[in-house]
Image (cartoon, rainbow, N blue to C red; front, side):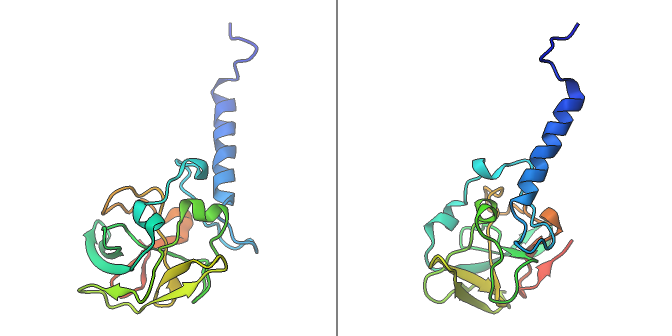
Length: 172
């Protein structure tokens, strides 16, 4: 006989589903556009920004090979992402979204490594942070990537994509 406090597997699934919905809702735009989902397996409260994201500094963008083909990374090999809910020159990722998708910070003019055909630039966010742009679009890291070559943020919520060397998102 089960304890009166034992809820069983059905209750656990409902609680888990609710947690996923909360995490997904954390990265939606204010006008309820497509979900900018966070990684449901890693809640925002436990996410850590990649070290390069926290440090800021000169932004050097490189091309690296991955399972998705050639992609853009920072100088440490951390993958750089595009957010489909952004518009050129405008970031729509803020508050809870940034816990999972920290900005790629840049000081001065970004530097393009060999094979980078994208136009690199910067934009100043409302908090004064200077963010790297790729073909005019804000660039982000994914907190679920912990090592060079990780692409764990690819296709999250069908709105997060890696950048190809030409600066176009790779939507596979």
